[in-house]
Image (cartoon, rainbow, N blue to C red; front, top):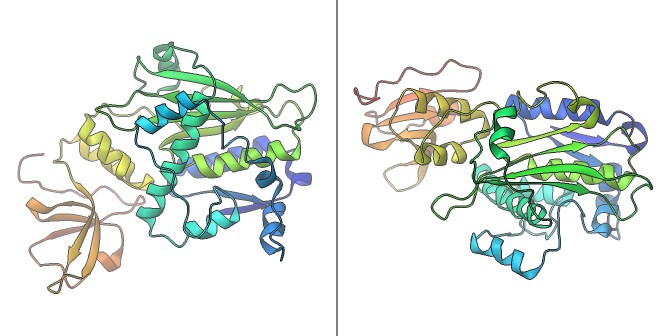
Length: 334
């Protein structure tokens, strides 16, 4: 879903805008992108004029770090590749480039970019330390008690006087077995004080990039005062082992409820994104989940489900978020 917003109208309804966007994200079936008229004008300009955010260096997305903290990110072997054909991190040019990629490649690259920015924000200030157990209990997050979190005040160079900036709370769960750590966070935009246009654009900039995280929420200060506002965005996760956690992270957002169901019934671990090949080695179909040794596959698309190149010995199931979970017999091992 794409919004093209103008500051004059939207500057006074930020809380309502964020509630709508976050509700769409929480539904699990949408990606929400917000662009401004500055983005559109820049793209259409024959001289390729830079947007205000480009000129400012995307201050909420890109953080300058001391060398020793850049090294911490480097130790995670986290890459920051460019979108095809452009060095733009966000904005309409990056969005158009995203659309040229297959979904799995797009999401993998997107997640790496978001992780890099997220860790840059986290490491730009000293984390506030422990206290994660109480914090996790309050909002239903399965936080590692040895984790770290940080509340960062984000503001732009030309922000309005007498404002303290806007609080971004980042939560970092320590990596397991050398893997990239789980990341989650929430942005509380202070709509009780006026925001200038660059801050508003930076808010949309951050939401466009960070929405790829499995656990992320964004709201306005006036709405955050409501009790338990985070509950629908940070549902309590089933305690699963690292193998199921990896499957959960690889799956599409709208398939995560199905993954949780499979884990809860002790199903065997599936392969995510299993490709079928026909007799000449060409890909003839793709299952969202598959158990090759049991010849079981669950498909998202009707065309893949009905592909003629898949051997008849495979048991096929078709599922989408609006359907009941299929009853799959794993041969008594589930």
